[in-house]
Image 1 (tube, rainbow, N blue to C red):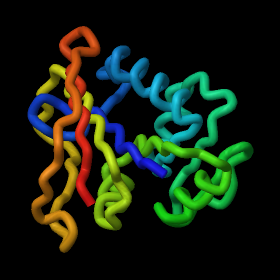
Image 2: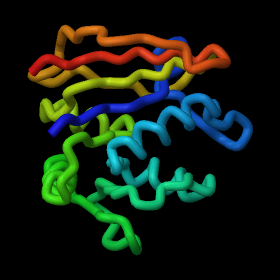
Image 3: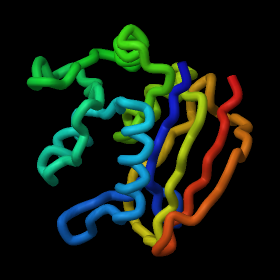
Length: 168
């Protein structure tokens, strides 16, 4: 099973923080929906999922959504997993061949630390933020890691997507 980490970053390398005053770029959201529909699923962290719900969510019918959380107990129609591996096991049992990992720096870091990411899609938005979250490469597995550029493209409105393979 292939796991693709999907993230939106600012031009200065932070995770793009959205708010009502600074909503996510339409091009990045459209791209996410395209990948989620193609995979038939996505995994998200609790905080990102709560933000997703507060903003009205998306049109994700017939898509398996898994929220990784140790504190949530139940969300109708949504699978709650206590760990990255539990989330992957659930989606594999459902027959998925590709998994889209979509939200939260903490969740992304947990998957990377456990060497569970095969590809990365970074959507770079034309924004500079002075404060933000980032990928933390300070574990034994990820103090330094070569990755291979597979593709790059413009999504429009200054949003550029970089697609990388992560060697195991």
